[in-house]
Each structure stands twice: as C-alpha cells, then as structure tokens.
Image (cartoon, rainbow, N blue to C red; front, top):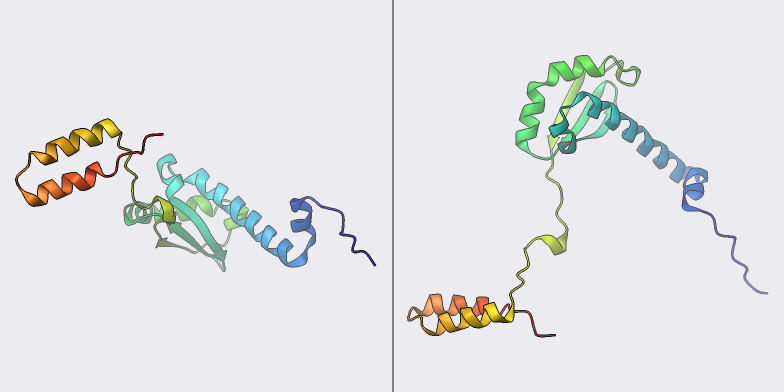
Length: 151
C-alpha cells in the first residue's frame, strides 16, 4: 500500500479553512484594520512607534516603542479618544492604555561589525609598534587583528 500525499494547497487557503487558524487569521485582520484606523488619527511621525495590541470592552491597549512617544501620546489622549469614538469600530471606547515595549533587536545585529582592510590593519599595527604605553599598544593590536583576510 503506497502513501499518496494530498494535493498541495496554497497557504492562504489553508489558513482560511482550518478552524483554529481561521480564528487567528480573523483576529489578525481585525487588529490590522484597527491599526489603520488608529494611524489615520496619529501624526505621521508617531505612526511607526504605536501599534494596537488589543481592543476589548471599551479599552484600547497600544504598544509604544519608547517612553518619549508614550508621553507624547498621553498628552493627546483626550483628542484620540474623541476622534476614535467617531469610528463605528471604536464606538464604545472609554480609555486608552499605553504600554512601553522597545522593539526587539535580532540576536545577530546587537553589535556592529568592523570591516577593516589589510592596508588599514598594517597601518594600525605599525603605529602600535611605536607606542610605549602597553594598554594602548594592546588595544591597537586588537584593532589591527580585525582585518579582512585577503581573498
């Protein structure tokens, strides 16, 4: 008896048809729609720093990238409440909560890389040889060791 796999389906069709995925998909679409409505009322500079996290029972939770933007948005709290209440989706809005959550940095991108040519490394090494201070000399030698290998 040979196993015959089911015919391949496009991912969007699988998401729309599977019940657990369908609920998640609709929730994501709803949050994206609420995000667009919110962005229509925010200043252009604030749009990338503020995201809808949840909306339930008249309370809107916004995730803000840093304290600076959270403070600026808190000053606009009453105006945002008034303007968002005009949309049918936010008809029963009573409060807006702001939560500061810095964006997560990818693990590989936490430090910055150093591309040093071999010519620059040789120059730094020659300067290091003329330095009498052992700490400075060691630091320059470590810097020179970061040179790209010749290809």
